[in-house]
Amino acid sequence: MPLLDVQYLGKRYEQRALWRAPRVTHAVHDVSFSIEAGETFGLVGESGSGKTTTGRCILRLIEPTTGRVFFNGDDVLALDRTALRARRRQMQMVFQDPYASLNPRHRVSTILEEPLDIHKVGTPTWRHARAAELLELVGLDRDVLTRYPHEFSGGQRQRIGIARALALEPSFIVADEPVSALDVSVQAQIVNLLASLQQQLSLTYLFISHDLRLVRHICTRVAVMYRGRIVELAPVGALFDTPTHPYTQALLSAVPVPDPDVPPQRITFDPASVDLEAPLVEVAPGHFSRLGELG
Image 1 (cartoon, helix red, strand yellow):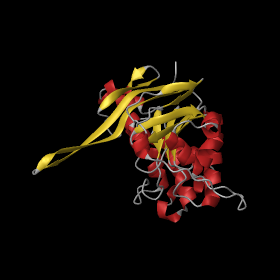
Image 2: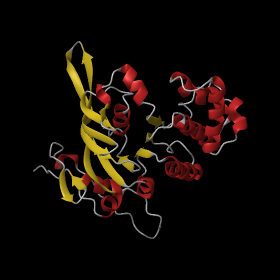
Image 3: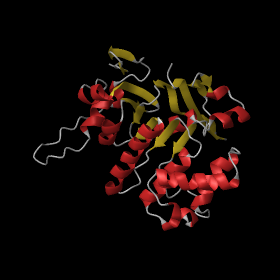
Image 4: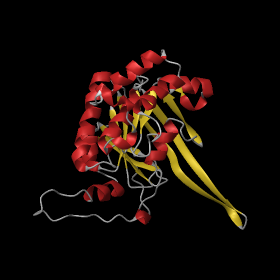
């Protein structure tokens, strides 16, 4: 049984106006995938494709409109508030922007102890000691507990955000563009930290990103989203070596080539040429693609 099983997840927004009928936007539409324990599952696509909304719906930071999400066999979307709070100890999130995700008025000690305080874990003295342990776990000195977020670099802030996500000892983490707001020189350090923590703590990741080179480096399987739907899902090697959906092919063709002597071979994607209502079909073992074409 997979650790996480997402079935037909959907999120619909309605924009109402007095002078016209409500305008409906499907941010996420019939998204289904599963993640095995210990896996790093990538979710990629251009901005606005529904990646972040999918991650937030899984954790119920946004309430989905349709679908089911099973975590360790329990339907997360059917849990009441008390049961959901208990389940959230096992499901945490690392946010994209380390500058916005940390309260600037709180010291690092307060930021790291807050999840423990909310869930009534340990005594105040134990929580403070746990905060110091978390800092050392992510490569920071425990002496920074008394400092404020503005006193840190972007990479250090993201390490604090990761430490906060680990406070309750979760087994599953949604990493939403965790390095996109950081300098390139720092990105590799954070990625290596996430990989090291996964090995130490037996973590499972849903890794949301638009950086395809990064996804290829760290993920085991990848799902490609376009207009709120998954159009292709495959093991990382198969997806990058033999993409089958026109959108995936166009997306991969946009990845910069490090050799300046190799001319870019961009593929133009025509949205009108594909049928987004077509079902995902298995084109190879474990490789699924939405191959319906129009006209």
